[in-house]
Structure formats: C-alpha cells, structure tokens
Amino acid sequence: DGNGATEAAGAGDVIKMGYLPSWSDGLSMAYLLENQLNEMGYEVEHVALSDAAVVYQGVANGDIDLYPSAWPEETHIEYAERYEDDYESLGSYYENADLNLSVPEYVDIDSIPELRGQADRFGGRIVGIEPGAGLTRATQDDVIPGYDLEGYELTTSSTTAMLAELDNAIQNEEDIVVTLWTPFWANGTFPVKALEDPEGLFPEPESLHFLARAGFSEEYPELADYIGDIDIDDEEYSVLEDLVVNEYGEGNEAEAIQAWLELYPDLLPPLPQNTEE
Image 1 (cartoon, rainbow, N blue to C red):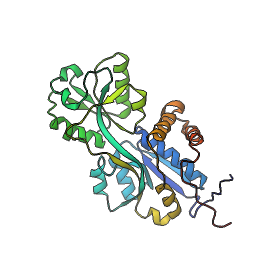
Image 2 (cartoon, rainbow, N blue to C red):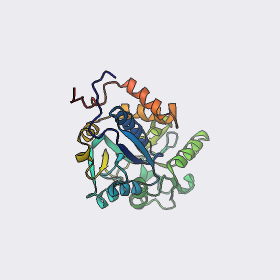
Image 3 (cartoon, rainbow, N blue to C red):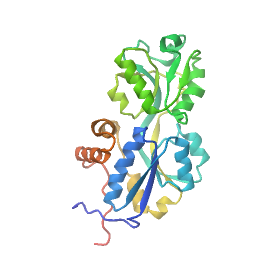
Image 4 (cartoon, one colour):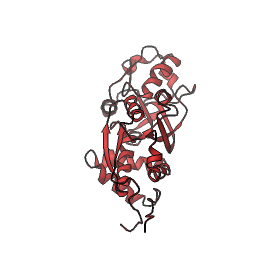
C-alpha cells in the first residue's frame, strides 16, 4: 500500500477485543484498532459484552486479548484492582476523561447541590446507564448520599435507554437528570450541560487505557508498542465517535473509520516497518 507497513511477527493470528458496544468509546476504538491491525495482517474478533466487570474478567482469564477503552484509574478501579496481576496496560490514549450528572441546557440548574429539594420536578429519578458501570457506582454510592439528594432514585438499564429518555425529554422540553461522561458523542449532539460538582464527589479526571491480557506485549511486542503510541485529543475523539455512531451508524463502522483516517491522515503512529526488506 506504499506506506512501508508489513505483517509483524504473529500476523495472521486472531486478536480478540472485548468491549461494551453501547459505550461508544470502546466501540469506536475497537473498530479503529481493527482497521490498523488488519493493515498489519492480524484478524480481529469482536467480543460484545454488557458489563465492564465481565470485560475485565475476560481479559484476566485470557479469553479476551484487548480491552480497547478501559477506565482503570478511577471509574473501573474496583475491577482494575481485583485483576491487577492478570492484565497489562499498553498505555493511555486519551487524557481528562470524567463523569458527571447532566441536564438539558434549558434547565435552570447549574450544580449538583441545586438538585436538592427538587426531586418532584424530575420525577424523583436520575436516569442512569448499565448497573455495573463505574459511573453507576459513583452516582449511587458517593454523589446521591454525599449531596443529600433525598427523593431521587437512580434508575439503571442501558446507555441506549438513557439516551432515548434524554432525547424524548428534550423533544418535549421536560426536566430530566442523566448520568453522562466525557468523552462521549452525546455531549455534542444533545443540548446538555454538565452540572458542577463542587465537593468533587465524582472521581478525578482520568486517562483511558488500552488493556491487554498478561503476556500480550511479550507475545506481540511490535503490536503492543504501536497501540501504546496512539494519542487522541478532544476534537479528534469527538469526530471519531460522531462518525461511527451517527453519520455512518451500526453496520458501517469500517467506512466510518476510513472517513476519519482521511480527515486525520497523519494522526496515528506509522505502522511497523518491514524489517525483512
């Protein structure tokens, strides 16, 4: 293809990537890595799961080779610490990821403490995502009791269901509180604002990591080095998720990745060079 890339040692092997498809950071990075791994001669098998704990367990057990977008520093620290001897981080690719409660821009509330005493206005609900998410745990265990949000119940189901409720509320200009995070394409698609967290009860901003099963970097050193050199900023990430989730959509992820690579042709590290020439 003219870029000097070659099949690295081990090329032709199948690399299993596990992630939650409803979490667009993992979805987007999985297809981006698939594109690059295919260029290096690897095959990729997508392992779609519905709970972060199961992804970590799969990596720890060696059933999954890569978790393409993990939050091990704060949000997933419970799972990260539980399995810390059985996985390795290949590096972080995005800085300043964080969690929040958000409301539509038309809601006259700007901070979490202002929710206190207004549960009836929001139907007594904070609309959450998957039960096993770190965001769910932080909201339930730290934020709601820490800010004394009596009368509010955190409802959980899925990211897709939360977004559907958010969209419906905005269409009807109704009050709603949802759990959100950055980076996430929904922040640019929906007119929402993150509520200030003056007590700092949500985790500190963290980096997103590529996690691999123990021994991966020893087995695939060139691949591990390449993945570890990937670095993406806010604008680039926002465009990536928007292309994958919105503009191209389910079933067209490969085309979305190609479109993103054409927008940022020099962003990713160069593919490993052919050392046999």
